[in-house]
Image (cartoon, rainbow, N blue to C red):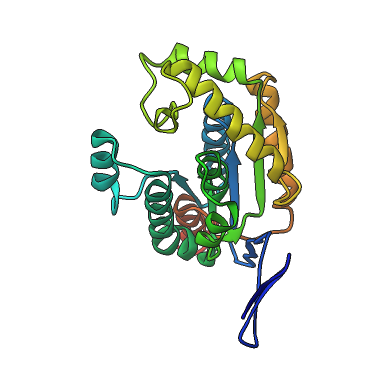
Length: 265
């Protein structure tokens, strides 16, 4: 006999709990994980690049990770996009494989070593995009249950029209999956892109409290936004001793080895 309730399934004396909200586990690593999220054209990539350079100038050891950048699945992803054979589920699984490869081979070891990891998109991108494609939200969250909750998540929020204008002014044409053409929303790429991005925004907005996003106004001047990010990060790193950059270690070693003025030559 199978009995289904709102929170559990009872079958032959066994109880299976249904988890509606899967929370990413706390990291508690020596390093720090800082993430930027937002739709395309929100300005997040510009800001994380500036933050990266600033942290390096502060003598911090920093690693940058970008969404869909694993060499493990790059050729498969390219082929599937070219042949237009992705389904929402296979797209989701391949993105999760890409993330898992980067997590296990780069992000996690570096966090354990005390490095600051900056991520331009994280699991939240999958939570937004995949669900916008119709994939079950709990299923997607389960795929990334091995990942840790970042120390900071900056969510860049901009009006849809502004983001779309920024994207269209910066490239010749929209790509098939980027525009959500696989969803049959519209035969027009720009219209489809708008509808797809609006659905993604809805998903992002629903995660603000769930995953403790810091919402950033993407309409502010670049300099003002960067100043805000630096202040937030500076406060969060106060009293934290991470791994110094190789340049910092080299400089300290050179200073230590230098002869003291007036000493024995």
